[in-house]
Image (cartoon, rainbow, N blue to C red; front, side):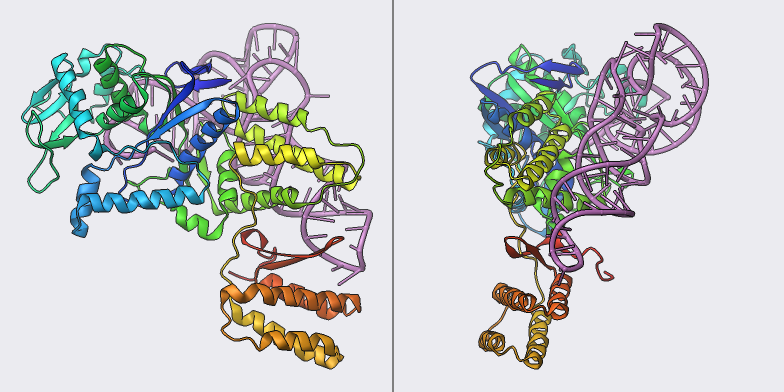
Length: 504
RNA sequence: GGCGACGUAGCCAAGUGGCAAGGCAGGGGUCUGCAAAACCCCGAUCAGCGGUUCAAAUCCGCUCGUCGCCUCCA
């Protein structure tokens, strides 16, 4: 298995150092909703973890919450609530969103505020070793004490200075020195420390937490490309300076960033689309397919059209998951597809190619089934790869919120016409059902089923005009009816909006 | 200004030296009462120019265009 390592700039053969793969992924700063850039990143690392596990590795996955920082403090002040309350709220949101996306939970979710002691221990040692110094209640890391500073992000101290957007601050020895510990201002959260009351700087919490839970050398350290500098560069410097040895991480993995239009989607630009918003209109499978359809190191542009295309692609895969078992003919041999899939994933997690294999397999399963071949085992392979590795559920999308009134209306008009056609036995059934009261969205399903039954009866008697009208109207309501040799099936969900949708 | 990435069919997107994956959309068929689904058939010489090579989307150079990081951000 080869993985592209940001540090070396090339693909390297991956082997964990011990029995378990030690994987640390930078988590969120919980002060706002998760947007789909987060979704992209965590879905990718979810697939990476899933694949490692699929390959037989035991994975220990740690992901942090940086639950104390300037933005949390500021926003909490604006809302008049304690910072911890704000952080807690968005941590819960994070879990809800990621669960909805079928992202496996990490084994440990440490939080910066619960690791203050460990953080202070690191800072103390760095000061002792001469890698950090105290300045007016702050503690700074001395970048010039770490010879390979800049190696990860491929830049030099000189180069960074040349940009000269760096503000020169008098209390620092070097402009690129960064805070390990920040003196608290009045009203801000503060913890007592040898350097006075304060709080951790950004970066140090990740070093403290990763080393505490995973040891001095990680197998994999992941995050978005926007964290490469300064966050990861600094993390690496302080961690290796602390340990007095390296590497801090054997493989650095960075995902490309999600764009909206021509720009990066980011909190600072305010061009956010939240995970929640997307899941209102699309299935989690569609979002995963959208993300996995391109390479994780490339930037990806979000458009609603792309999501809709992914939804239809998801529907295609679901179709395979739920279709028949084929016949008793020659079985479809799935191992070649499996091989190709693994080969793609082994090459730096080429999910786009792996997905192409899955689509090839889908087509061949359908074809073999049509020709009477046995596709039971082939489908098993298909489901295993799609579900376990790519984290797709392939389940029917949730019933969308349906407007009950038009469906009842449709029933009534159907009944009226049935009367005309003197199909008394149907009327009786429908009438009985209509007498129920307390109808709400959750009671819609039986009505649909009833209409389907009515329609089938009509079809049997060749009343196609009315049968088609029922189908068309249901379709407009977001309910698809498909006549198959096995009978009529009804489906609802985001993938079933009518093709020629009425003006939105 | 410094560093880096990218530019492949209508759209999205793999492919890094040897006849250009896959998805969506579109056209033509098969099946079906009709639809839907499914299956079959149909599409690009890879931003432009020059070079290396028997052979380049794939290597080198230049040009044009887009984006990212350099400040908080997955």
